[in-house]
Length: 179
Image 1 (cartoon, rainbow, N blue to C red):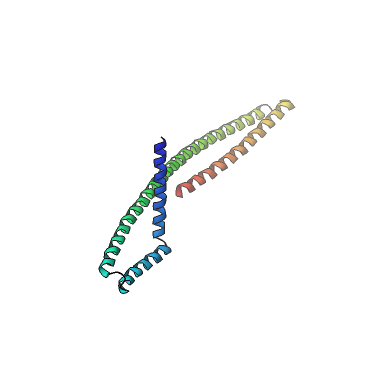
Image 2: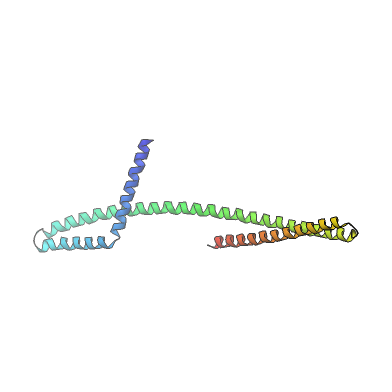
């Protein structure tokens, strides 16, 4: 287990180095260093410090080795980016599934609210019928009916508030789907 962790740490260090080199190669300081290197390489034979053929041989070898390593570093960065993109794609799929589930839940809640509204209307009709049928009831019965009506109206207000919240959630889901 420790050997595996140690190996992972070494790989992470190498990846950080590769990312750093890849970043540096694409920077202005790298451009300046390479320009100075090439100018110096061609200046050495002009100053007769090194023969032109030897300079070309060394320059070609160095540039070839650099190109090989840069290709490796760039491919490592591409592979790492591809892995991250796959992870993000999986996360997006999970989010879309969650949104679909929430939408289904909201539809079910909306149906429940419609059923509750129908029940409330039925209760109100029953109360009205009772009030009409029992006009001669005593004062306590009428007070109970008034209280029941007020509870029904209160429930209606709560249901309306729930509907508004559901509409707001539906709008948010639609925005998430578009985004």
